[in-house]
Length: 95
Length: 177
Image 1: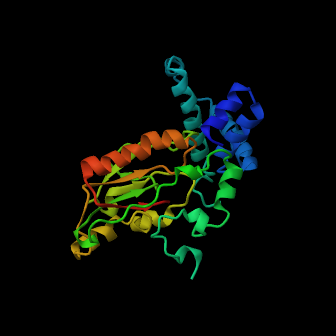
Image 2 (image 1 turned 45 degrees about the horizontal axis):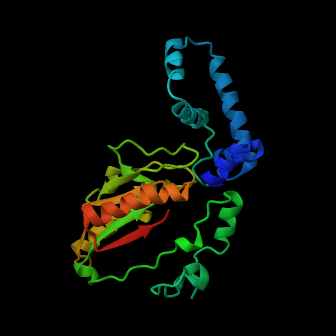
Image 3 (image 1 turned 135 degrees about the vertical axis):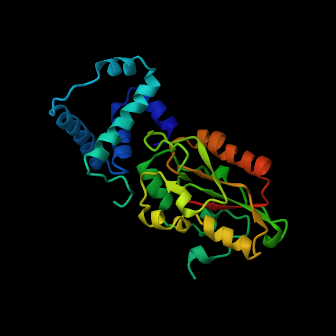
């Protein structure tokens, strides 16, 4: 899935193609694994919040004032960060 | 003798003459990443070496994502890939370098960087006089990429300009990861 392919899918609001790409990217080429990885990252985020620790709300507000492109990339960075810290790491290419 | 052992010094396209290293590679890539295949018309024949290796200055270009430990890592999380490249001092040693990369196993390369980025082997070849010298810097980038045209405009042209202009090499060793 090249960027031109994705641009065309985005222009047509083809959710199926866009979601498939995200799943392939996060699953290292395996769509089912990617879907599981997305679910897992949200579950891991919930686990962290269940610790009920103080949070830096000013930091969150400051981050959300950043431009959308940076936020979108941060979204992917956070996914990989949370998956890595969970200890279940599949992205070393050995699958 | 396998297909990979055949003489590839001619200007023929390896995909047409059957010297492609992994049969079915293009099918696999197109299945997983439709539209990201390298187009046939982008094929460029290899240039001939103009002087003996013992008098030539060589550079190394790799898609393995290696860089100096003191450098900020490349972005391995971007879904479309990273469009920057790193300069790796050719005098660097294994302990100076780190691979920051997803999607391929590099446990063995972490123990011996030269199995994927043969920097120390090339240094030895210069010491033995089998190579004329090395460019001051080698080059590394992230192989995963979803935008071949942007990649060509940024990483490929950037490395090519640096190699020819700043580094003044005579030949380049391309090492895919």
